[in-house]
Amino acid sequence: MKRLLNINILLIATICATSCLKKDLPGVTNSSANNISDFNLIYKYQDTVTDNAGTPNENTRILVRTVQLNKTVSISNDSVYVTPGFPAGFPFSQKSKVTLTNIWGYANIPDAAIVEPVSGAPKLGTPGDFSTPVSYDVIAANGDKKRWVISIAPLPLVNQWEGVYLQTDTLWHSSNGEQVAPSDYQQALLTVDANTLKATGAFWYFNNTGITYLIKINPDNSVTITADPGAVVTIQQDPMKPSVYDPVNKRFDLYYFYNSGGNPANWRKFHTIFTLQQ
Image (cartoon, rainbow, N blue to C red):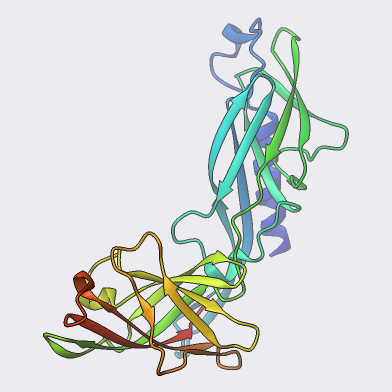
């Protein structure tokens, strides 16, 4: 495992340090280009994979996964501003482990140019601390030098409840009666703030991503359900049945409703149990 990780580090560091090794190198040796055109962040983690589980040929492997974070980049004069995000499918179990104090950085620079860290900035192609602005000199092929400042915005907030949940769901529909979610239905609950998640109501039935609501976990593990301002309906908490969170089993037990078109005669009532899977 250690050897594999070291090989990856060496390979990436070599790529970053030799960006000028192109077939047309002689044609750019007098270039004055010393800009940074892009900046990326890479996260690496160990993943355990089991092959042929439950058979005599069962085998466990430890792999190094490499994920490039999403980002938006703004470049102004000698400064590069990066706002990172998590790509679709990023493992929920890893989100809280990602930190700007130990992440891989890569800069796009011109062919035949080289980049050098300034004042203790991390060496590109190795894990380093990008939690505060860092500086790099980009030296063109003809020797012209320009100093750049890289500023990385904080990572998206991930609260302790975010994750993928098994959804046991019963919907009572004013026109169509009782409906029950498929037994293996799952939903990702996403962070809104430090103690609030965003969920979608009965997507398995309505197939509508706009039926969303907010789940606030209170200090006593009671739960407050409120309308999502961006939703197409106004979901409300059932005042007669308390919604709660069970921290031992990592399970939400929720009661809520909405009236379609705002008409109380067209009610939709829900009992949703979310059980954390990952």
